Length: 497
Image (cartoon, rainbow, N blue to C red; front, side, top):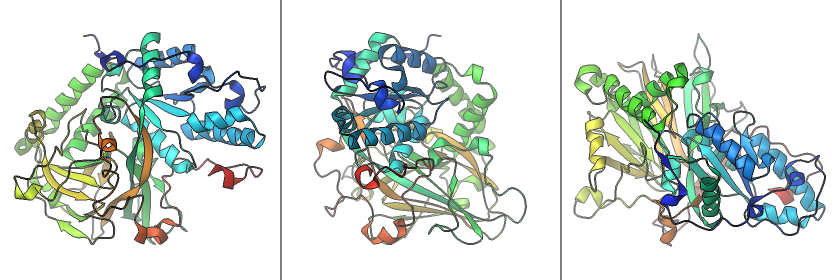
């Protein structure tokens, strides 16, 4: 079966213009390169990050095409070099050139855009790095769908099928990037806290199974305000969703199978078919046969929500049949489905809910009983069981019949041990800030068309909780992906960040 591909022709094409409009000279990218004189500054300078392992062979093909069209140093293979090192080198060099009065460096600093091609986990990895660097003028990010779910690209109008890799398709994509709209989206901070084990390994999860989107479960230092004596505390972040339960279990089975047999996962349609088969095998469709009720969410977890910044915690009552909970930032899940839908006013229980905006400082919390329940998403106006919209959410896991559960962040799952004694494991999610994405038309996230959507109902923008300023001082805002980012002594931080 030929792989289904997506090209920018599916959307209203935009003129690409000369490739020089996207070109960044060597001396900007490499500190040791010879400085050159350029006639005019590029209108849309780009740095392209591509996961060569994504999309079967498409990642490698895409790298080849971009390098044929642009400066080779502008196109980074993420399997060879991490994005934090690339951006560290670039921004330190640009800052040096700015201090020397280089006008081209200033113009590129102002107009540069990032392109990332890979799955949702790869895109989240780059977004985490950009957030960590705390740049005074962070570049907006466009995402190329090159994974299985592709929720991030789909949410911002870049499609969800793997792209064509020929030169014409890439030129069309560059044209769309040049004319794309900038849109702010919320980012979310996640902490995982568990008691230090008396025996056995200290790490809760095998290192090879850690998702990029949690930034390798960055453990906080002893001096961090989040550290609790006698416990291990890990931090991470996400932009798309956090989920827990059976859906994450199916995803975990898929990722484990792909690690064991990567040669069988080179086609997007085949991958999606394998995903569905694993769902059947794991019991996502047949709960009564293979999924004991002791593994349903309410049997081992208590959930509390804070609905608005500065509000109070409320316990969320979950029906005993719920097997999966999804906390959504974007209106896209499982390859473009919208579990939240658009609440109306006819049902009393929906009147407290609003449409899902990506920059309102709220997560949409949805529950599912099984995959049959999830099939309602395919129907017009279909949605999951709306549980809450929350500015913060806290999961408390106590000893129960299950010894583990499964969790997933932005498409990357892991197997999470549960307490074996009277300990409590805590996962807490809180609003962190915002990052800037590039949105293509048509865009599934329309919040930029609503002047009130970037504000809460109280009319105040939710960059962070005002009452939590002290809580952030010791680095809670850091995701942990850019620990290698250090400025040389001669660079003035006041000009840089």
